[in-house]
Amino acid sequence: MTRTVSFCFDDGFRATADKVRALFDDRGLGTSFCVLARPDLAEDPFIRAAPIADWAYWREAAAAGHEVAPHGWAHERLGDLDTAAACAGLDRTLDTFAAELPGFDPGDQLFHLAYLAAPAPVIRHLGERTLGVRRAVGRAGLNPPGRRDLGGDVDCITFGDPAGDLMTARLDRFLDAEAGWLVLVLHGLDSEGWGPVPGPTLERQLDRLLDAGVRIVPAGQAARERL
Ligand SMILES: [Zn+2]
Image (cartoon, rainbow, N blue to C red; front, side, top):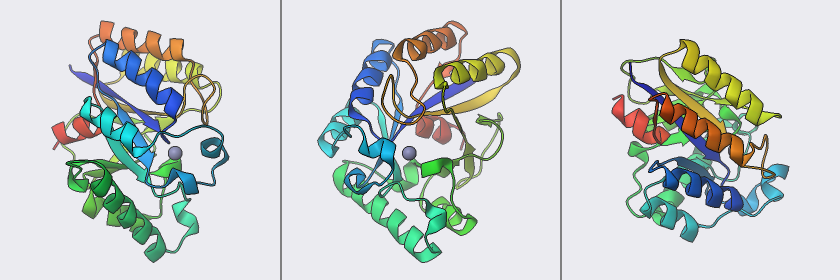
């Protein structure tokens, strides 16, 4: 029974990205950085509180084998906008990614929703333009084994404080009793972002998963493998 875990690092925190890349690169693993088209315009206090990496950084991370995937324009709550404005902002986001990242094709990547949620018409719009939409579907981040339709939903889970302990408990449950693909959404390490995870906790859990024979792959890669 092959089991897969994807780690998504949302919001693009620069110091976190450096640490994450070191941990994953040391183990020959790729991961997903889910970033904003215009983080400089974000009003979310956690994003405003820490340096965010720029496009040159993300081009280099992508060239080194990591996924750099869309997370939105400026971290709006899409449910607060009317549908046309929300969809226009998401289209602008995908256009920005295509302009900034060589080889970026929206149809080949998941869209990672800010706050893990959007109204149904917005999700449908994104589903038509991208490989799928990562959001909180309600299965605690677990995507069961088997086929997934194009444009489908990818479930994910994230953790508030104490995020390291909560993530470890979620992985306990996965390793004890579950099969399929688990998608974990983290923000920053140590002191950055909402629900930060201590770097040593992430490192221990990566090694534990590898020891247990679990595959660790970027979320978009795992989604493409399921088509
Ligand atoms: Zn976010």
